[in-house]
Length: 327
Image 1 (tube, helix red, strand yellow):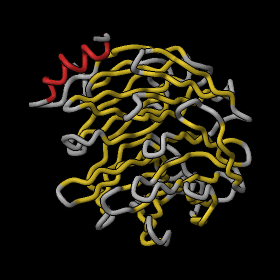
Image 2: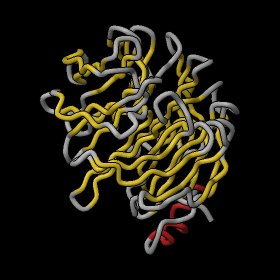
Image 3: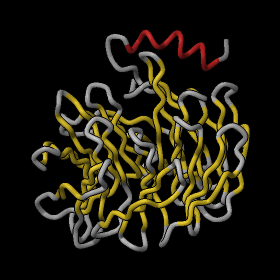
Image 4: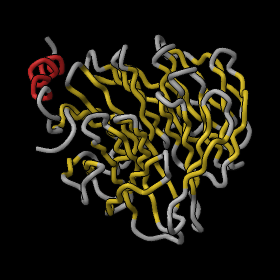
């Protein structure tokens, strides 16, 4: 039994009654400026793009080490993993590069206009959504044909796409110094069905969603129009109402819904930790130190336990955490 398998087996029982506290299992050295990260749970692999090296590091958690470094044609700006097809996608100059998760070979590069950045995959139809930071739109790619099938207009470029599997709704952030909004699209028709704003017209940056008790919540990092301190904002998507708002220090780098007990985690680029909170709280309830400049993160669930990987862009590492929350 490997070190990691031992922890999975012996610590999973802690999650039966409540969420386990986070703790560092391992730190992996990767390329320079790792930023966006994705996981393939069936194969137990982690993919992280190294912005300064123009590469992707592949971490195989079955053997607990980096097993491949994949060269890219240009600087990456987004990454996502299609677990259903065992492929991973990377935004590069002029398009989205598609790689085979078995041997890490380049399958094709899908040409898109503008400047492709953040990528998200719809688990319902496997369509890919790619933020365009130049043309204020989102490219929709059909993964069967590897063709762009729609362009979704947004008011400003953003840094977040969230997909709710239950409602098949696509949430796209728009952010600007004068304010922002979240555009909501139907995942089947690609039509705009709603636009979410808040009093004060804050800019929306990173997004995630959580369905709970027939309610759909949008989690967002927001900032007042014109600048100012960041907040973690909880929005009821049925009414667009602000449910809660928690002040955040530093410069948040991403938000992720943990899927249990309405808990969330936020990476903080200005402070080298992951902040944990609950959507009903009034403040961050604990922090878990990781590497310097944490940015992208992703979760892996194993039975009743859970693990998280965090890309630390300033010290060129990926941190593997067990559990959610702090001791």
